[in-house]
Image (cartoon, rainbow, N blue to C red; front, side):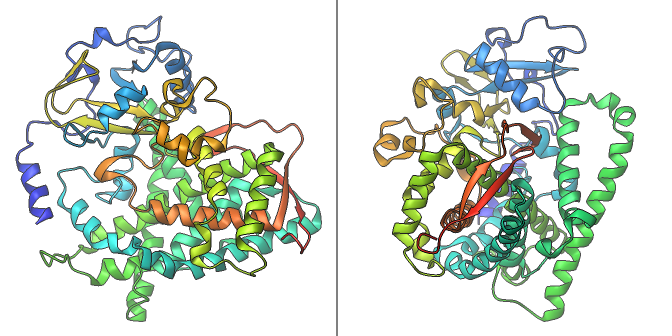
Amino acid sequence: MATMAAQATQAADPALPRGFRSAEQGWPHLERIPHPPRRLPVIGDALGSNVRTPVQDSMRIAARLGPIFRRKGFGKEIVFVWGADLAAEMADETRFAKHVGLGVANLRPMAGDGLFTAYNHEPNWQLAHDILAPGFSREAMAGYHALMLDVAGRLTDAWDASEAAGRAVDVPGDMTKLTLETIARTGFGYDFGSFERDFEREGPHPFVSAMVGALSFAQRRNVVPPLLTPVLLRGAQRRNAAHRAYLDRAVDEVIATRREAGGGPGDLLDRMLEVAHPETGERLAPENIRRQVITFLVAGHETTSGALSFALHHLAQDRAVLTRAQEEVDRVWGAVEVPAYEQVAKLRYVRRVLDEALRLWPTAPAYAREAVADTTLGGAHPMRRGAWALVLTAMLHRDPAAWGPHPEVFDPDRFTPQAVRARPAHVFKPFGTGARACIGRQFALHEALLTLGLLLRRYDIEPEPGYRLQISERLTLMPRGLRLRLTRRSPATG
């Protein structure tokens, strides 16, 4: 029935153009919204921008121009929103819905109508959501716990070897290995062998290289004028085609392996292959299954690896926070060799550390929302049906109106129950908002808390001398060049 509703929405919505819609098409009074000074013909506000850091550029502009602003480049104009009150309005599902635009739309050649990249009118979104949602139930999550522990054991084996040799560890690289193996094994029963690779000789797994290449290409397409794309991105287009072909082959191999085995343990892949919609009896088509697997493998590890990396960075930079987190793990988990599923969620302070890291650096740094009918935002900005804005999560999470006078300071106690209750709603959105928010949120949180708990119990961590946080942007955010030095904690404490 939900699929029929989606099809009705598609039929009722023929007037909205597909593809990129510039702001002047939907905002009748753009002149009320500030833009950077020195706007020039053709290039607009692109002067001084860095094509590799569009999110950080937008954050700097946001700090100057306020809670709603616009940027234009080569004919594309985008409205950005980050004020807490305005973002709360855009979270209203009766007035706004997910908008698939910018980099998300640029991923459609790779992910098609997967859960993350599907347009609202496409029926496969609701079909896949209804079939796959039970795969993220509490019962299913408990079933993934042992596999998560096994993958985390590969990580600690690698870190033990680095610690014994006196080598610093590559945090983003190792967190990427961890989260790729975790989603691949728990969701699809597949082992990429990331920790067994000779990284010095072979580099990252080809799936990771292809994924990073595809995400980076989508990011570059956001900032390169379409008419110049064939010239400026000719070589990048060829490489992107090769990356997409590799991702397709890798996923086809995952699916073929499962089919040859005649079934699996009832994981996400089994649900995709065998389960019909409980009301309509519809099944996912083979092409859509490939797109869903790509979506989960990419989105299911890329964002969590960034969240873990940022959390470890902040723990290493703040000895008091690190000590407090270690003391909680020691107290809550005690002397057990491996924590039970129920023990992970009891790490309340470690969860606050993770949330605070996601506040400062949400690895998915923005999400787009579009008006479902003509409306007015903030009492001052009329929007036509289909008009959209990019909610800049990284600045919403820094709005002093919601987070106080020093929002740049890392402070896990912002997430005590009392502090959370005192804040306005809709000001913390690391997983998006509404019906199209991340389906794997609880999976990611359990994986991240389990990993942080295991690492905190086992190691003291220190940053390399002189390290200053730098951010890599490839649609998601990741610390660049983050390496930590390890010291094994004594058996009495870890």
